[in-house]
Length: 332
Ligand SMILES: [Zn+2]
Image (cartoon, rainbow, N blue to C red; front, side, top):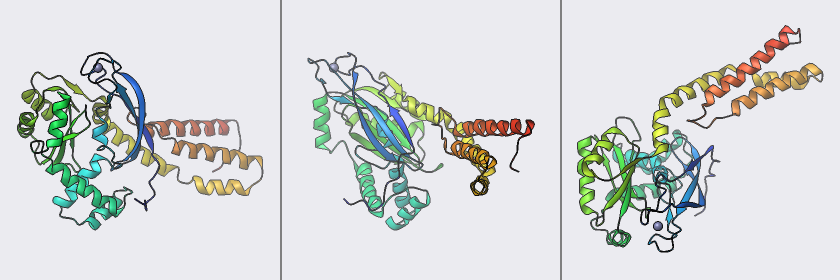
């Protein structure tokens, strides 16, 4: 397919590792065997994902050399998709809740800052329809695959495009990477989730040996009710992202406000470039420092961009103050 819309560069990188590091079949350690690299466009950013893929090295094991990918990869995007699961959920919601046409959905996504072609919207809407229509019960290919595999590790993710709206729930099998079930739920109470998981449990031809989720309370309780004896792992990435969200939002706001205060750097640069003396050079140096500070993005949630910008601008202001104390020349 010819790409008409150039894809923006990834703004940051995320390294994903597996929660389960022992082979699900023979229990021996699964070592990181190779890395996979994929770029995913979500509703808010373009991210390059580095995936640490593990494989069992035990020649006598039924899972010998079968790749095991980080469990939370599926929370980012479906296999081989370049658009995030959140984009897919948003498209489904725009279509079925707001009754928008493909053209209108395309305009909506562009308005949200997502670089996407209209054709991709059509394709994703087809994928969305397939996803929610998927039935494990009638899918002979999936049934056969699971029976041969003998067990599953489930990853359960909920995507909510808008607060107060319905959630798209997706259950994947981490061993095969296949999506086993998906549905949209308006309320997503513990009761609703437990009923849905119970339906799924009854359709599975093999036992569930592990579960992975973000640990959201109603989901955690629903899982405990439906799969009482199955170990439930929490995805570190999700956990950290959810915990850091309020800080991240506050920091993003702080950064925006700080940037407003240094907008005047451009005319100063022009003035400095027009002079050919040492003062001009000094001013240019400071302007460069401000520019570098603005573009120095941290990697949330571990490094807060707004705080870092504040530190760098404070250092520049202190340096200017020292210059003033020494009686040096200062731009006004
Ligand atoms: Zn093994």
